[in-house]
Length: 243
Figure 1 (cartoon, rainbow, N blue to C red):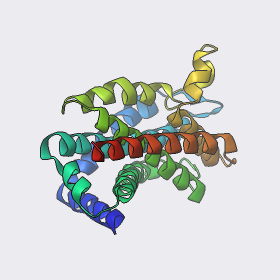
Figure 2 (figure 1 turned 120 degrees about the horizontal axis):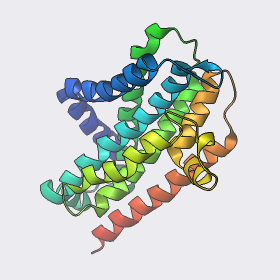
Figure 3 (figure 1 turned 180 degrees about the horizontal axis):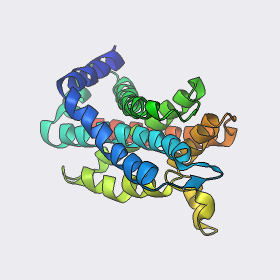
């Protein structure tokens, strides 16, 4: 029941800010498509660059959408509205509250991905997006929702959330196999970047879009991130409850 309550809160918030959320999910990827996909006409791995760019953008927006849906809201609720304190004293199991936040954030990321797919559909690229693609995107969203939860517990003020976006999300947006392949990076740095969750997501979604099968290593890495950051979230929230 606690999970449904959290998801209902996310749904009410989505309906209230529908246009803001939609335009926020649309504007930045649209600029990338115009500048990189249309303005710079080139190829990548023997294919039109648009075919390389779209899977990367779809992966990226699940990251930014999921992270953004959790990081700022949770920071405000915890620091100013004290809503988290009310959850602590309520009969709602805390694990249900955490799981509801994670699922809600990931669904927000999936909505952003759907907006991009609808926007790029007229290009007729022939890219394949199937059930595995959407499962990977959803999994990527859960990973970044848990990361956002952890960072929101660490935040000391409302301004910390935008800083986390600048320091963590923005670098990954450009480096993690989104706009160019990590194969072009120097040795050592390339291996580190390839282990980040967005790199694995972009690689698997891009492989599927080209008619291939995703590597099981990518799933393992994403699940490791999900388990580790979920455990840290549980630790923080139960530690706060027991203070």
